[in-house]
Amino acid sequence: MFAKLPAEPSEQIPLDPNLSRSMTSGLGTGPASSSTRSSARRVALVVLAGVLAVIGIVAASYYYAMRPVALRIAVGPPNSDDLKVVQGLSQAFLTSHGRIRLRPIQTEGATASAQMIAEGRADLAIIRGDLSVPKNAQAVATLRKNVVVLWVPAPMKGKKAGAKITRIAQLAGRRIGVIGRTPANVDLLKVILQQYGIEPGKIDVVQFPITESVDAIRNHKADAYLAAGPVNSKITSEAIAASTHDGKPPTFLAIDSAEAIAQNHPMYEASEIPAGAFGGSPDRPEEEVKTISFSHHIVARKDLSDATVAAFTRQLFAIRQTVMNEFPLAAKIETPDTDKDAFIPVHPGAAAFVDGEEKTFLDRYSDFIWWGLMAMSAMGSVGAWFAGHLKKDERGNSSSLRERLLDMIAAARRTDSTEELDRMQSEADEILRETLRSFDHGVIEEGVLTSLNIALGQFHHAVADRRALLTNLAQNLQRASSALRVTGT
Image 1 (tube, helix red, strand yellow):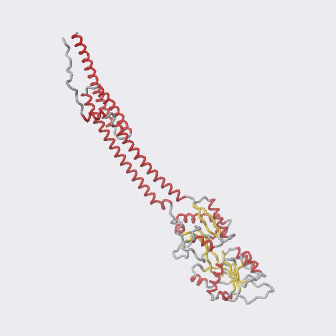
Image 2: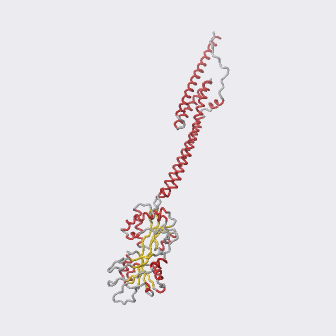
């Protein structure tokens, strides 16, 4: 009579408390995974920033090492050959587009130039080697060598000549003219006379400006003259020419004790004036004359970097040939004395160039580059460790998602609520989304994705079966209730 109805459950099947809490949390796995991804991005950005910082430091070091450097060079006096040569070098340095630029600072002479470098107001200076050399100055190059010329003018026709002077010892009681206003030449004369036992008080010294020296010689203003300069000095040649009368050349006084003077005064060297050095007919002089010489040096401050001085020295000798076409004096530029016992110590940067030991950019900064690469490697290792650690967390998260999915399969088969099935379906969709993200990030392998796909398939089958069962049960209950109402009536 009555249709047999399925037994109505006496009570609702309880869910696993942990499962219930997980389901009621909705999409609880989303924020954790998002936090993990944010951490990974932060670590990646930090590592990238570190690598860029190291690259930036290396690039900045290269720019700092290779940037153009302007060096102040003190030189004087005004209108001197030294000043003209330095100005020519400055222009040549500029047009050669080298690393070094020169900025000439005009001074009153070698003494003032030496003072400027001693006070740190100049980086380079042209100084005389027989003057006081600043303690903070070191040689970079020899600008030129100067010879000392002592001579007696030829007697003038019709003018009574005094006792003939042929030796330096005969200068006692005479008037000696010094060409040029610098006190250094007077001191030089005193050194020579002292070697021959002539006291300064026994001679009369008068200085003539360069522009007045020829007229002074022609007017017989002194008995003998001293000039100091390069062998091919125009000033000395003109003075010698003015000392020639009636075809008779002047008498050149040999400094026979040149070696002894050089021994007692290391700033001087024994030297010779070649025959015919000053031209004329007959040759002036007619034969080689012994004398002493000293040098004009290009010096640099001791604290100037070796790399900068080496670069300056390299450029100087590279463009010397260019400058000497206009300034022949530039041809006299020579490398400095690199001996340890040199009177003026050589700057290490210039010595490195002369000895062929100049350091390249890599030589100078190899330590910094090596440490930079080590820092980059360390940051890369730390970044890789963090990335691996985060991926490990994500892999663990993927494993927990898979276990959660398996728990949901069992729960779906037991639940009697379609609302719970809908909630679990939404959670399964989020699990799929997170799994695909992890796969895209390379955290999980294709095999893990396949196993999760199988579990998702089983879950969807379990949900579909349970939903059909619950729907069929509800329909049966509805039909049974309708039948009971019909029978009762």
